Structures are given as C-alpha cells and as structure tokens.
Image: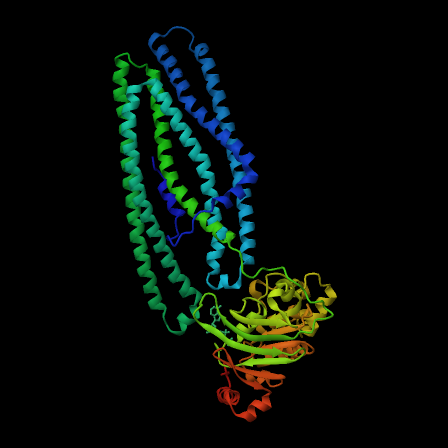
Length: 612
Ligand code: ADP
C-alpha cells in the first residue's frame, strides 16, 4: 500500500511547524477563477478515467470466464468469442490513456499558470511592503515563500485534484461493482480494509514525524558546515578546525542515527503491508473459492472481485496519503497568501509633486520623534528639529547608534515619524508622492553601495530609467568613474557580477555616485559614504562627492570627522537628540562634545587603525 510514498513524502516536509497563518480562501478563489474552464474539463476527464478504471475489472472477469470455459470444455471458437471483448477492452484502455493524458495536461496547465500568477503577485506585494516589514524578516524566508511554498502549494493542488478525484471515484465505483459481484465478500472486505488502512496511516504518521526530525537534523548539520565554510577565515584565525570537525561529526552522527531509525521504520512498514496485502488476496481467494465451489460465484467474477478489491485498497491508501498532502498544501498556501493581503502604510506612489521650477530643496524636521515599528518601546529620535538650508551641506556626527541613519531614513520616507513632521519646501513629506520624492528629488549614497548583476551602463541608468547614453557618461564623469570604466575592455558594457564583486570598493562607490547623480537630485544624502574605503580611494571618492554636493542640499552622515570639516553646519547627535550645532571652527572653539570627538579620533587614527 504505502511503498515508496513514505520516502517521497519525507522529502517535502523539511519545515518545522511555526506559527501558522490561516488559509485565505478568497484569494485562492481569485487565482483559480480564470482557470475554471480548464479545471472543470480536467475534473470531467479525471472522473471519466476513473469510471473506465472501474469498468475494466468487470470486463477482465468476463474474459477470464471465457478462458475458463474453454479450458474446461475445449470446444467452440475461443478467438471469435473473445474477440469483441478484447476489442472492447483495448478501446477502453486507449480511452483511459487518452483521458489520463487530457486531464494531466489540463491540470498541469492550470497549476503552472496559477503558480506563475501567484509568484508574480506575491513578488509585487513583497516589493511594495514598508521597509519596517523587512526589518523583521529574513530575506531567505521571503524567497522561500516565492519558491518552495508556491511549489508545494501547486503540487498539492494538482495531486489533490488528480489523485483525490480518481481515488474517490474509483473507490466508490469499485465498491458498487464489488457489491454487485458478491455482497457477502464485499462485507467481509469492508470490515478488514479500513482497519488495515487505519493501521497503515497510523504507522505512516509516526514515520512522517520521524522523517521530519531526520530532516531537521540534516539541516542542523548542514548549518554547522555552512557556518564554518562561510566563515573560514575566522575559523582559520582561531585555529578552530578540530572543534568545527567535531561539532559537525556530532550532528552528523545524530543525523545518521535518525535516518537509520527511519530506514528501519520504513522497512517494517513495507514488510507488514506486504504481508497484510498478500493475506488479503489469499483470504479473498480462499473465501471466494469456497463460494465458487458452492456455485454461488463464477470464477470470472472472483477474478473481477480480486482486481476491483485491489483498486479499492490502492485508492484508500492513496487517500490516506493525500490527507497529509492536503494539510501541507493548505499551510503552504496560507504562507503564500499571507503577505498578499497586507497593505503597506506608506504607498509607493500617490500624492502631489512640487514643480521642478519651484523646487528649492529646503528640508526641515520639526519636533520629530521616532521609534522603529519593530521596537516600539525604544525611542530613537526625541523631539528632533533641524533645517537643511537649500544648497548647503549639513553634517550629522556623533557616536554610533545616536540616530544619524534614522534621520536619513525618515527623509527618504522609509518610515514615517511617530510624532512631528518632516517638510520639503514647507510641504509635509506625507503629502508628497513617495516615488517622485525618491526617484527625482533625493539621491542616496550609502556606505555599502549595492550594484545589480548587469552592465555598468544599466547600473547607472537605474537612477533614471529614460536617461540617454550621454547622460550616463556625464554622470560617470562627474562621479570620477568615467576613466576607470573606459579602462575595462568592455567599457560601459562590463557586467559587474552579483553585488559588484568584480569591482573595488572605491569603484563601486563611484558607480553608486553616478547612479545617484544621473537623476540630478536636489537633495543628496551621503550615509557614511567613504567610511569603508582606504585612503587613496577615499580621496577620489571624496573628490567626486565634493563635486556632486555643489548646489545641492546635502545631508552627510559621518563617522570620520575629517570629511565634514568643510560642511556649512555640523550637528552633533547623541541618543537621538541634537547636542551641538555649528561650523567646525565654532564647535572647536566651544570645546564641547565635538572637540572631544575630534580629539579621540586623532588619538585613534594611528596607521592601520581608524576611528571606526
Ligand atoms: P547611527 O546612524 O547614529 O549609528 P542609527 O540611526 O543607525 O544610528 O540607529 C539608532 C538606533 O536605532 C540604534 O539603537 C539602532 O539599534 C536602532 N535601529 C537602527 N535601525 C533599526 C531598525 N531597522 N529597526 C530597529 N532598530 C533600529
């Protein structure tokens, strides 16, 4: 009954149960509705194929009866008598094959199209979510929903429709023909079979649980190896190789133990089910044989009965396995649909624009307080007020964790302030179109520039999708990047690998600057843009940044105070509040926090050691 299904099932059950969302039937219906016609046809074909399957054993029985007659009586023409029955059977076999082909093709069509629609919509929904949403999630988990969960939902859906329908119809049909063939034998069978299937299901559940444990243990062992190999430098630096090997071996050993236990379980299961099935065949033959002997049943009918009862058993076993699949399919579907019904607080588009000619680029924070949504009790900014005058450079400095990057995130409208307001040219940021704000007003250059796995040209053009090649060259020139790009054999068509692994830090940063400059932003945010660079690249990048800053409202977030001396205004932040404001000279004269920071950084910046 079970055969290799147990092993197969173990492969699709790697996830430990976590807090489960509920299945959204309305959404499911929305994805299903466009495919109702194909699905309906598939169902009809599947039902047809199942009916044919019910009918075939009856004809087989008749054929056996003819064979029996000729083995006994040896007269008449066997060929002519069995010919029409044979043709009939052949036609049914072909019909069955055709119906199977038809419903499988249709089901695969429905399943794949639905999976594509679901993936597309889910991806769109994920991309539209608030940044706060991503703070609490691991990228891996989100990608799993797009890949493995959709996959599992799709295959469950297909299996439930095809196997479920077929098994139910076949079972019902065969029970009817069994009853017609021999009510007494059927009664006996109906008493024994459910007990056996029940026992099998119980054992199967136990095995599945075991298989899940074994899977989890494998993941655990893989995790150890993954961590060690991924951090091999640290492992080497601490001479941790023997410990890591021992650690891996322990996990591997446990994994082997569980897998062997599972293997034994499967062996027992299959041995027992073979015995049970064979005994049932023997029992049916024995009891059926006595009925045949007593002239209550023909030999052919007994044959039909045997074939039909096997079909019932197979169908029941299938259904009990399907039950597990239903549960898994529903929970995969629930995970897939969960994020589709979420609406972000900050939409991507919608709101007003300030006409280009009137745009000044004055940014002001007024009494802004803010806590990150994932840590509501912890106030990061407290009553923060600051104005960035148009065309001027304002630098935020202070200890790490003081809230500097948070200020930039609020300006990008990654989050909305908990209290207070951020204004651009006197307009509440919340009334402006976020896509316009991010796409055309603000340029953002961060410490770790992210490039996409395409050409340099396309990477720069991400800043302004309709930019001409000339605009791209101009932006690259302004960012001190044109020369190094041209030194590559492929020039602007160089593919920069995933995350730009083929470029140096300084080169990546200059591409990021070009990408930000191409949109000619009125406001520029530089979030520790040079802190990850060495001295020489820092000089080239800083030069590009200085050029980029001219005529723009610039917010610089800096660790290295050497880079902000020329700022029009330096704002010292600590614990989410402004502690000091002034120019470099003013703050040095004052002798407060800023001069202290400068002093401690000068002390620290001996060769090979920087202030970070
Ligand atoms: P800075 O840029 O001055 O180093 P940040 O603005 O990055 O400071 O961080 C200020 C505080 O906010 C820190 O305590 C940090 O732990 C917290 N924080 C930063 N980002 C998040 C986030 N996405 N979710 C929750 N807390 C955050």
